[in-house]
Length: 340
Image (cartoon, rainbow, N blue to C red):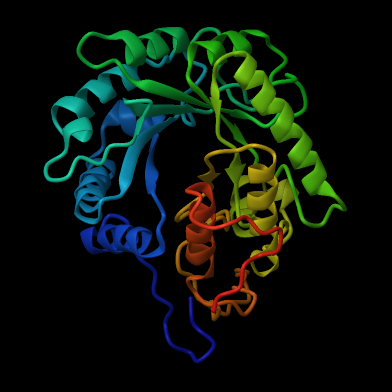
């Protein structure tokens, strides 16, 4: 890739320790509480050196900059060929024993919820998955994380589809999902691509869903965290993933942060007391909130989206402002805040 001035465009690697250090430094600088380290099923199963290096560096940086950090197991990659969640159980033992994730050197910053270490299991109830939630050992995994005498006593968050409560639309129509949810502690619905600024009054739909979700969770003694995202685009990725259905560029536009702040304000007004931001550094689906250039590479083959003329740190700053609202350090405004 080349920039408009002909210079080669450079990109970072999360395998590089200084990259991870800088990312956590930004979190501290902008008042972002911390991150979930996404650990895919394949990484857990194969325990590859690369992903373990990133985790080690992340926990070191989290301690250095006093940012929260937690493990999120993503079931993507789990097949239909008899595999189950036992690999995750073994991986959690390894992370606790060998990497000391819940007892890292220096400042202890592993994310706790209600006094217990928080572990997330993501990808439960999506109909496009090859696995069936009834036969991959999810109850055993949840029971292990909550009740094992050595590795348990954890709070468990479950990552589910947007329509988890009604069991339709983007969710499997299986009431067993509700049984699993009730065994956990926090519900995290995946709402990326489910709302858009291009649909009139779509924030009303987000508000109503959030209110109804929170009521269901309250009735069942569960906590609830809405998922928000600055925008979405996977045109480039879709050319390889589904060449028969290539997606448009910038399909869910950021509108300079307007869409992001609309979701923040809507979720908080609907009763949310915490927010999950998707994502810190996911570039291939254009959800990243970290620093991005308004002068992306120029290519006849690959399309890039810019920052709508906003500063590179615009979404880090907005996320920090949302965090202040959640901490009651400033009042919520419906209009996106402006920097002084």
